[in-house]
Amino acid sequence: GQNIDQPTEMTATEGAIVQINCTYQTSGFNGLFWYQQHAGEAPTFLSYNVLDGLEEKGRFSSFLSRSKGYSYLLLKELQMKDSASYLCAAMDSNYQLIWGAGTKLIIKP
Amino acid sequence: GAVVSQHPSWVICKSGTSVKIECRSLDFQATTMFWYRQFPKQSLMLMATSNEGSKATYEQGVEKDKFLINHASLTLSTLTVTSAHPEDSSFYICSAGTGGQIPTYEQYFGPGTRLTVT
Image (tube, rainbow over all chains, first blue to last red; front, side):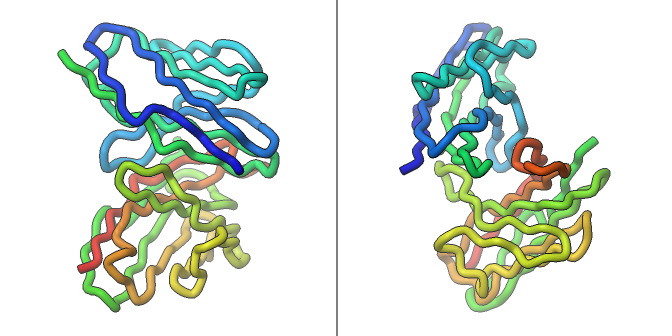
């Protein structure tokens, strides 16, 4: 079956760095997405990786290893507004998105 | 650009009644719209995919007669929850694909609708 695994919750300190991991198993693979979702709001797009390696975009970076079925989202210089859930989603061979349950990130002062 | 709106943002209805949720793409034409449901602390669950002018494609386990989807124009899709029951209480989110052959690559989400059935 198809599956996405990511930690349920993580806690980090303002100004620090946090890495949110995601492992996936899909029928075929057409890329890995990360979305940010604040409580009670819709997800907003953060990143898309289809090739191995690190993609950097400001304070956020996303990494992909296709051979390992693994991705991570790296958040630097954490701010209180980064408190949110982070959703990992993999696109399968039919271009359907398989969503993880999300990682709730709690930022403490 | 690429703004998607949903109305209402929240609704409370009595069991047995029907509720309609609108999803609009404000500044682009959305040939494909997606409807999701999200229960607390769970992942997004795709309910159906709708293409303008054609019948929606429902995911396995989603009752098409209960969740009526209409995509009458390139900027509007509606989801009607018929004969709602408390177990239908959830966060409903729509998203719009900006076109191209694979709309899931670039989809923009609406702000969601919180449905509570009493």
